[in-house]
Length: 307
Image 1: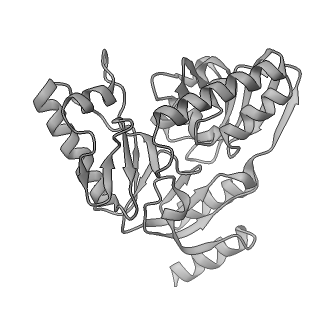
Image 2: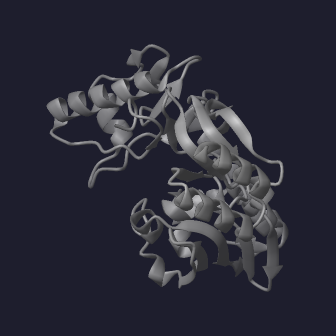
């Protein structure tokens, strides 16, 4: 009875956007993952607050994702509600040298918008396959740039449903981390401080960085980007390659021969195969080099993958 009551209220607050038993492999760049009990793509802060309150009242788990670019979802799916902050929550506006953007906007779209406005500072992000919210959570970076360099202010939602506004300094940005991941906040909106630049030069710089990315990374296969965090003083991909693991494969999950820092899905890889491959890499690299690799990819779902 309680479940039926919860579903009825969730259906109402979702404004017809509720999807039941939605396959998560359709919502991750790995193209892996079983069904979520419920998936909703909210369109407003108020809707997000209502859904969170509903989940708390009925003690239903609630996970928040962007476009699933740093995510490995269990083959058994995800219990409870998945909130996907994507294109339905991606408004962007410019004020002088600043861009205000909702968390669901794709970094590639945001970087292009900045370039068209003659605003420099987001060139590094143009090829990162994630949303702004996800980039804030992990302080995403590439080619010498990172989000911490351009974030002026972030509007967040606490687990209790309270809205907080933190400055860039208060975000506690570090290597692939921020206060968001530590406190379980949800990123809602971001203010970015950029610099004046020539649109043609900015777009040329972005094109060059994206060409380098295509040359060095296995973008032709589904993946979750860099699988491991960078160990202090080392590069994960180089350690994996030197351990003789280029092309090492379990099922359809494989260490990319093009860039050993990536695990790719060669077709029908399961989450279990990826997780087993990650554990094998960790063991073999440690045995060979004495360095412990830590996964950068986030696990989500029922026990079996994230347990």
